[in-house]
Image (tube, rainbow, N blue to C red; front, side):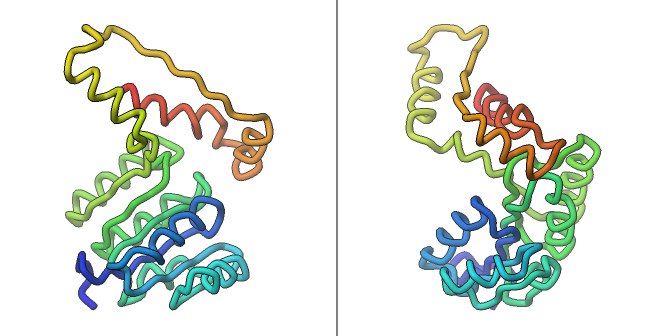
Length: 190
């Protein structure tokens, strides 16, 4: 299989938590995906998800699935603090990457990822899923067509539960709900 063939994709999903599970299911159902590899820091979690979605490889090693010769694109859905290393590895191998938001926990790490993507001429995308929801498309259309007049500011509200906030903090004390959720709204405003 070629490194990146849009008709026969080999995909590695790094991280088998909630979002990694969602991304793995989508990849497994996509008609162009011919090879699927899943990794997680907990090998049993990767194995269980791999069995559920029919992955060809399930491993406790991110490096193994990213460097697999049948993998041509990588989805990084680890906890926020663990994005940098798998993204760097994939970019250095010339494999396009979709990384869940935020791209990294520090500006220095984000700059390092962007510089690496540019150096290896590899695509790097951040998974801001909100911008693809219909209601936001419609809002953007209204703005672009001038139906709302000249915008000079914006506001947004987030209605996350305390349980969601505690889950975010459990993954990483540095990945606060503000960093985890507010980045969606900054992306939307831009």
